[in-house]
Length: 78
Image 1 (cartoon, rainbow, N blue to C red):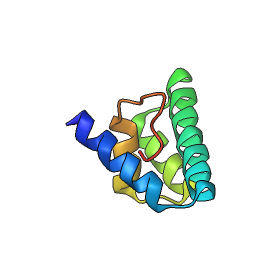
Image 2 (cartoon, helix red, strand yellow; image 1 turned 60 degrees about the vertical axis):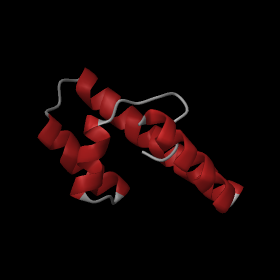
Image 3 (cartoon, rainbow, N blue to C red; image 1 turned 135 degrees about the horizontal axis):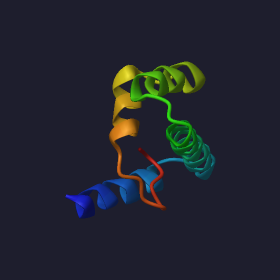
Image 4 (cartoon, helix red, strand yellow; image 1 turned 90 degrees about the horizontal axis):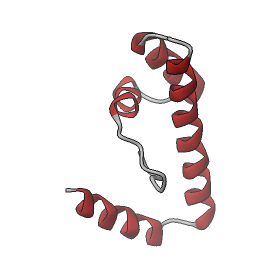
């Protein structure tokens, strides 16, 4: 399954501008850092979820997926 996700990510990267890829990468890094920091300070997943929704303007479903994600170093589209 992971190899399929990597193939899809590679295709997506060829279909979008380098600027979009860079912006998506920065946003993903910000979301990941926010989750890691909040967890380090003992924040509940519910509070983290609400914070992600407010700060990044993402849907509750996307925020939940981010909380449940197993982050990889080269993940761009979470």
